[in-house]
Image 1 (tube, rainbow, N blue to C red):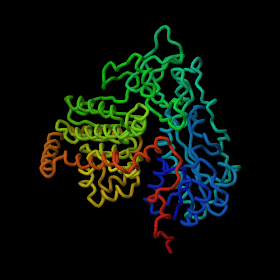
Image 2: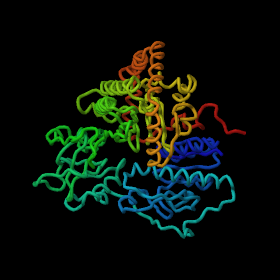
Image 3: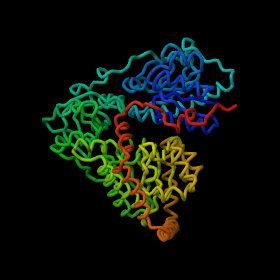
Image 4: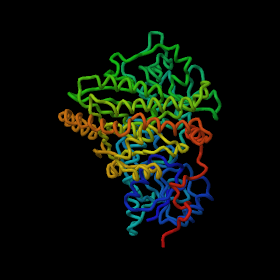
Length: 578
């Protein structure tokens, strides 16, 4: 079928559905929901068999849904209605939630039901649930709905006839519903409110007497304030996070968006960097055992061992890796490779492995009287230093085990490892051009062509589309697709890594010989120099595309047009087949 995606943006769920439906032979074109007239034009150009709305922030125009079958993906159980479905589910501690595929009509979320799926809730942020449980349920429900549309015999169930409809109409969740009462809310309640607002819109609050929005709340299992500490007090810092007292303990605040700059200048930043002077006056709360700490406390880099295998977790918010984070991870990597193990597995984080350089910190360089171009240069060189250390590692056989999504330079940092294993369900975006025609570095010109061929590398960079785990293995970018369930994935990784450790003498000898041949053919530093010549032009050259794209990305500016690689119907020469 020809399926038109009408969506607010090409977010993670939309990407996954695009990949899954394309793999099943459907022709997919995308139109961003900018205006009624633009959507109507897209429908007229593409003449779709079906319109799918994976992620909308407003209703589909009546002029479209009355003439075409339009299916809306709603992140709520049958009967749930309203724009804050997942927010309310988290705040009200629902044990089970779901996704419903609804036919658009004149009433929001009240159309006939084409498919639905449920899933058990876990204690996680809204963004994490959306990227994982919601996305998996949505894929199952949408694929079922599409099959039913193709079959032609299915009759969708009116909401009024749904006997399992336990959901209800709930209003937009406002800041008054999210507000933290530091004098009454215990740590669990504080974390629930932060999790329900993570990603967007955050929780409106005060820090150091200044209005701001809080994000990225993490539990603290051991640390407490002193005898004079009051709930709400900010009592310490660790790396970029700040510890805040509650009535029964404390929670970490990872990210903050200050309000004092005016909305145009606001950028979400790591908490200690958002308030640098105030944070510097707080006591530092270091981890007692460094990378290998086992306390129930926040740390963004963690190391553990199982016999001859070391595991290095790095859980950076949204997968963004700033200059300092890259340098700390390089320090941790070198420390881990000095351990008496044979295999080192780089696990990344549960939601993201890495998305490359930290665009928010780069954008914020202006506020610290710095230069975004200079910070971009420092950040990409720190990423390159890390990638080079992984490529040149002689003591250990290295594995990148991707639990979560990865993009841009993060994909090639992972590919720097000797093996790349993917959890089924995660997505890769191994390209750079969407960020203002950024060329990219992280040794991708050395790492990618041998895996996928010169033509394959050119296609990946040109097409700028996500790869599923299966597609990444099929094209040669990755080495294996493992279990989709997170616990099963980690168990499989541990088992396979142990097998590699048993064969490490042979593997390391082959690796050394391969590096010797590669270095003789073309020294590794030449790849870096060539890439950085292009990157310097992106950062410092006359074309401001990268800086403009970054500005709009970090501020979540509304789209004014749909990229042509997504909107097939707007490409020159495209016409409806037949």
